[in-house]
Length: 569
Ligand code: PPS
Image 1 (cartoon, rainbow, N blue to C red):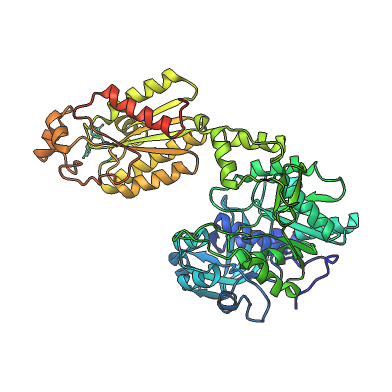
Image 2 (cartoon, rainbow, N blue to C red; image 1 turned 120 degrees about the horizontal axis):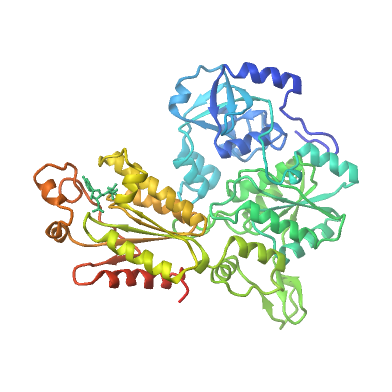
């Protein structure tokens, strides 16, 4: 049993300052692995004792035990594989027994690891056993198959330095810093609240109740490492949490940020969260309905039952070492003008509730969010980050053959949008891009992909910063267009417009005389003649230029934008 009192320090994996300076110099000669953002989060919690009793990235035997029955080889409860995934090439370059340096993304050496194990994991089995299904709709399964390296390395870690954070430094605490603070202020019973969402009034009510019920102080312990893709960014959330913190009675509640990379593994994740909070000196932990749920699977069903997490936690409560406080779903009762647990609402009274989806809709459309639901300061922060769609950035991506009319329509659209005003507009036309961004590229598949991805990157940056990007390349390959869509959609809307002029018509027009040259074999790999074009299957809009003038085509795009809520009607 690896129990530690919440008053005593938890063991860390760091060496002393002097040894670290020496080790850092020596480690510069080792082969090194550049850690991924997720691995940096894992390493930080390994080194500072957040993942105690782990001493490094899991060995193969520990991994098998964790995957199969949530226990390391020596029988310790540990529900989540903490693995160092690397490329096959890097793995092959190593000898088992060798020390490697682990570097952050700027190349700073954070730790060394003795590689005791190297193996190719069965990822489908890991997905089934840890996440409940080998289904790519689960973000961690998707990560496992599409982002994580093919080979795992395991071995003990020697910690040199913490990863560097420049944001909210005063709000980040290691387990031992928190323990020391609890000792200093005399907190003995501490209930932790895990969250990856902004807090509204219902959360404040439920956490306050949970603390009262457990006769404990409250630690708001939000995750700022990695959460579910699409979540509100942690900068915004922390500003929201700071606003909510003022609403609790002073001296009963505190907040600390946890640099955890969540996996959204529901029941297993709840157990893991409990262990992490025990290591941070907490005695109680709030587990809610569908704790750390990943959303719907590819069949449209929930991955886990709503109370699976609470059940698994309860079964292992003694070993986890923190007591579970179950989360009450709080709803607002209109007649009483206050919050009640959903199962204690006085009969006949009116219950008001706003779901997460409804909240997102109201934010997206700039609609009212009532005071009974949230605090004005929180709503103000959310509105700053998530302005209504008509004020957000977006990308219009035209695709079609050379001479299809893409550039002409894109130009007309740009002028119309500039006439409306409100957002800056940038046109990334195929020819212009090839002159300024991609002048060294030709028309091989590889070069076309690079070209389109560059356009996508610029468009995604413009979209992120609230502008309008209009792109008009040929973009012949569906997979590359999909990659661009993904890049842009993490920041705003993406509107694909297929300019569906037939190849015969483009060749008949031959405005630049290129088709003639292509037919004569003087231009090689010419799209539609000697190079393929994947016709978009589901573009947001398809415009036919044969029979419609440019003005009309641009107008169709405007109507679509209006329909998508991207421009005010
Ligand atoms: S791609 O495939 O999206 O990277 O192409 P793009 O950057 O849009 O560039 C297309 C313009 O380059 C001229 N051009 C060719 N097009 C297709 N195939 C070949 N081999 C080729 N060689 C030169 C052509 O003028 C395209 O301009 P648009 O504006 O589409 O007519």
